[in-house]
Amino acid sequence: MEIIDRALEFEQRKFVFRNTSDRIRASREAKELVLGINEIYKKNNDPELMDLMKRLSVIKRKAEKRLNMRISV
Image 1 (cartoon, rainbow, N blue to C red):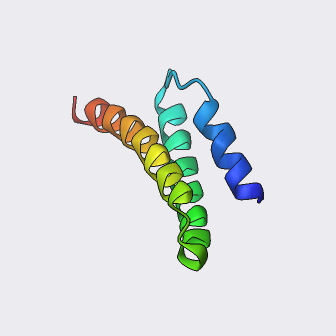
Image 2: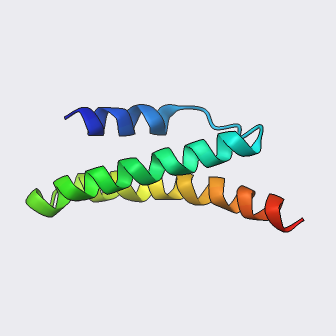
Image 3: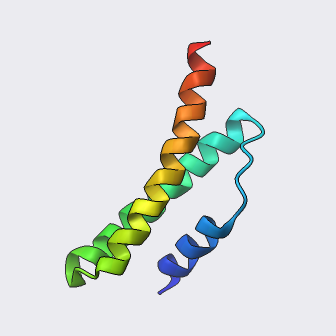
């Protein structure tokens, strides 16, 4: 499954979030991956997929948290 491989690769990347565009890009990519994995999860209810989606959501939240801090300042 290509999307699962992409998600695992995304999860292994080192996230530094040096600028706003990196944060936006990471947040959007994480969202795309979670939604794609969710479609697969709906069909087979594999708990490992749910764990993967949770881990990706944590990365997404970190990027968005940094984004919101930056925008509000």
